[in-house]
Amino acid sequence: MRITGSTRLAGIMGWPVSHSRSPALHNFWLDEHGIDGAYVPLSVHPEHLGQALRALPALGFRGCNLTLPHKHMALALVDRVDPLARRIGAVNTVVVAADGSLEGSNTDVYGFRENLRDYAPDWDPASGPAVVVGAGGAARAVVAALGEAGVAEIRLVNRTLSRAESIARDLGSRSTEISIHPWDRRNSALRDAGLLVNTTSLGMTGEPALEIDLAALPLAAVVVDIVYVPLETPLLAAARRRGHRTVDGLGMLLHQGRPGFEAWFGTPVGVTRELRAAVLATLAAAR
Ligand code: ATR
Image (cartoon, rainbow, N blue to C red; front, side, top):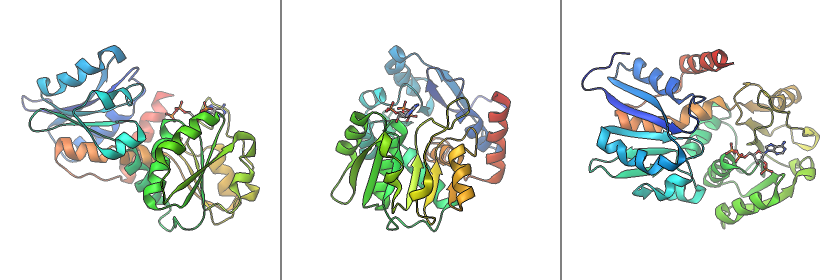
């Protein structure tokens, strides 16, 4: 990468930010397309998020991504929030408009949908209820994506019921019923399901596996894990052995970056095998 006097800038604000894979992702695309641009990590303390966001237009930045713990707070700090981001309660992408105002959106829904489209193109939202395990920030994006896809019933399983209730209140609709299932009933919640998604951190390297018995899950069901370290979690390995179609979480991370990149740098980008390999290499190097 070569920095010139007219290099376009974007970045990611987080606290901490050093674990983020977004710089590897966006700088891959910048190199791939020979764009005079740079995407940098911005270590921003939560107390300074407002100041940091306001500085984007002042410094000539095209925009930024937001990661923990900033995604919720940003809702109140940008000038406009798209309706989907408001429903989810999180902004992960900020674009500086021509007049210097800040537009906030959430591209995790897009990332989840595109990853599912890549690896389970035959999945039919009408094939049965979708079971979502977990009720954190990631679950909100997944539930919103399933609602948009037209899933009629979402079964939300979480250890802390109040968090699942809050998602059902915020994201349930006339066309998508969200039912809540206690943690100890997660196995039976799989009956007749067409899709199972893990949105918890269980199964990630260093965390215990998600303990779930897949016996009740129809073999035609697709199993998705949003964890991507390791690429094949114990859940995905068990699902593959039973013969399910499985979808790992890396594609969601890669696809969610596309709308921001395209807005900041004006070039459409794709998720290729080379991109997956480059980001996987940075994940391996970080361990
Ligand atoms: P994210 O924004 O990545 O979704 P989060 O908001 O911290 O992260 O949510 C983590 C999810 O993993 C939650 O659903 C959490 O369950 P609780 O709401 O009960 O905390 C779930 N989770 C994490 N560790 C867990 C464990 N050991 N057993 C069951 N669920 C767990």
